[in-house]
Structures are given as C-alpha cells and as structure tokens.
Image 1 (spheres, rainbow, N blue to C red):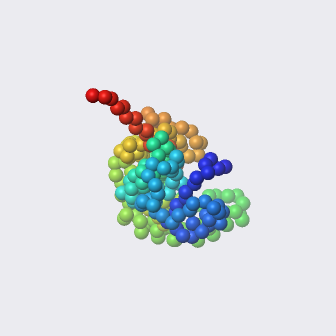
Image 2 (cartoon, rainbow, N blue to C red):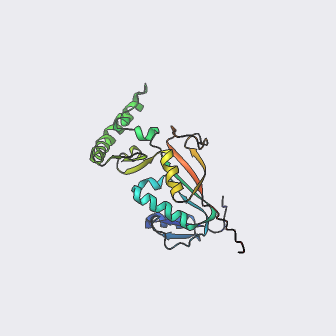
Image 3 (spheres, helix red, strand yellow):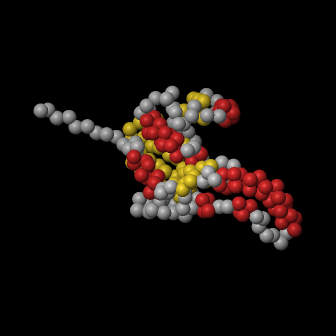
Length: 214
C-alpha cells in the first residue's frame, strides 16, 4: 500500500535497480550508496528506511556514516526505520553444527537432509574457518560471520544499549523498538532481549527557537 506520492529508492547494485524498475516503473530509483547520499536533498524525507538488516553488512564505521546520512536527508519530525541483528539473540550463537540434519523417521526425508548437509557443510565450514580470524568483539557490538548466509559474509551484531547510544549521538529520539518474530515492543528500560534482531524507529527532532526582544 502506498503511503506517499513521493518515493525515492536507492541501491548500489545496478542489477537490483533493474529489477526494481521493472516492478515499480515510474518511481525515482537511483544508483547510490547509503554511506554517501550526497545526491539527495537535506531535510526532505518524512521517512528514511534501510531494510532487511542491510545496515549490518557494512563496517561499524560505515554504519555510522549511513545513520549520519539518514539523519541528514530526513526532515525535522521525520522518522528513520531500520533493523539490526541482536548480539544477545540466537543468531549470534549459531555455529557450523546447526547444519547437522535433524532426525526424521521418514527415510526419504532423512536421506534428503543428509544429502543437503553433505552438499552445504564443506563450503560453509571453509567460510566459517576463513572468517574466524576476522571476528571482533567490542563492548557494545561484535563483528562475526553470519550463519544465515552459510558464513560467507561478516556482519555487525549490536546490543540494545549500544544502538540506543549510537542513535542518540546523532541527535535521534527513539520512538520505539520492536523484536523480530513476535513483534512485541521493547521498552526503554530493557537492556537485553532474546530477539533475533531489532526494528528501530527513531525520529529527527524538531528544534523550536524562541526569539525575544532585548
């Protein structure tokens, strides 16, 4: 459902843009990197969204650039929406052994699971070991290979306090945080959660100035 008559979509992949243009002809779709949105007007958009935990797929320093750019292009009073993996959640604890086939009394199903494991395990194990030396753990976040992609990519896993701190450092006001799966709201006093990832809704504040005669 369309909630606006003025959409702008960006992606740094030409192939993704070609797909989007076929599905949404007539929309303003641009080849652009979220870390540098200089081609977009400042204080313009009512909502800036980064979908599918994509912000986790850049370095922590670039993550800060993305949020800084999202703050810049959003108009005062506007919202920023993004999702991010939870370091305290089950995704962070996943390991190569999750690829072991689950037992089934159905021999055909069990056989298929064994064949799938034999096909996926060697490349996943290779990527897992290759990226193990690149893992980094910090006070509020970690960088680790993602099991969801068979350990092919390194992503950022954040904590609730760290992501709140980071948003506040750019001037955002956090309107709400929701957990994945059950979609329940996570309140400000909560410091940890078992959600797989978080949905953050933050607002760019409206600054009011009072002018007085001398």
